[in-house]
Image (cartoon, rainbow, N blue to C red; front, side):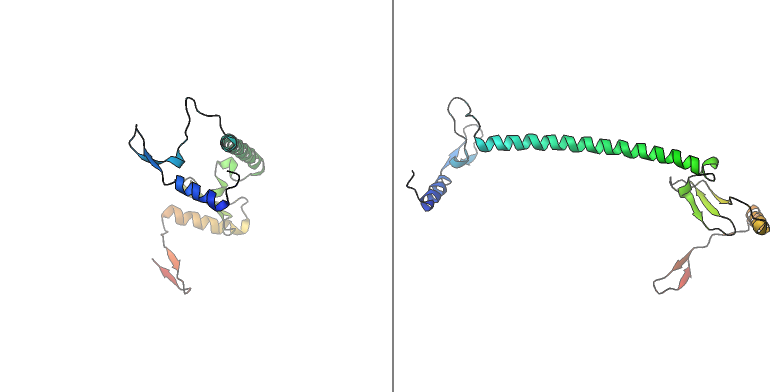
Length: 171
């Protein structure tokens, strides 16, 4: 077999692919070249099978490692989030004492500092608050007039849309 040329070797394997058999258990047709033939016991794994088995073990270990890493990252995110909330409670003198979520607020500065859409972040809007951290004497009358307008119900909802061409249309 040492004297076989590459062409002869290729022809040999091509011929092997043309020999077929029928499985006595399933009745399926198979190529003889695809069979793993052994006599009484399964043969010892060859070098390729050993490499493939080792690769499978490595892949399983990598999957476990990835899962563990994801768990650790999630725990670290949760711990970081809790720590950030603690820090915000120490720093935030406006929203935390009122049990408001700062993400629900929009800064407008005049005539009040914030409009808080209480519950917006959770998707369940409870109410809308006008919040001013320090009442300025100059804004006091204006804020009182806003309060009276709200108490009397003298307000309406209007939706305006800015079109592609820059014009504003009321819906």
